[in-house]
Length: 265
Image (tube, rainbow, N blue to C red):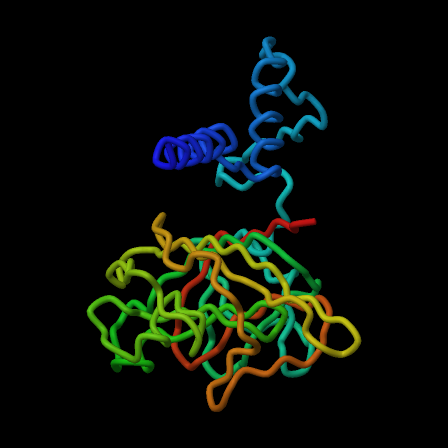
């Protein structure tokens, strides 16, 4: 009799456990799944996910493939958009009959009269016609944004130098993903997206960034600008606003053509 009673108690306990056992699902998971399912069931018309406004502005292109919303900085006619960096006088580089311009060694850097913030810059350059020197001494120039941040210009075709100083490097900060440099008898194309850093109360709030496409190849993929691109020492981050685009005179007769810029608002 006692054994029968014990077995009955055990059976009752097991049955109670089985009745009360359930799978616990977090409430937020239940809510999310319900919303997704509900949303999917409610949207039956493709027009419900179409956005018509604002409509992107249409732009056109000229014979040089310059977009209509760009500011032309050099088209081969003159240097009216540029001044000498050292004294703000008229830029002294050479304009050639083929509508290119060439660094005139010793005249110094040149920069735009206008200041810019975040931009898309297009420029084409070619190494000197006669190869002289090696490493940093061969076809060296550079394009600076806001007079502080340099994307290196250098004849890096079969010309070894330190990797964070070769063509398309963010000088002394970021090595390019690949070396896409063509021989010195061919023109090089840079398309650069620059987002300026932001400062607040005298301190950097948000770093700037560079994306660089060299001859159609992505070589810098939205990399962080650590600060000014210094030849000696670490980057600096003094507060500043908009600034000019600067081209460097590094004593090498580098050629330029077809330079235009689009402001990113």
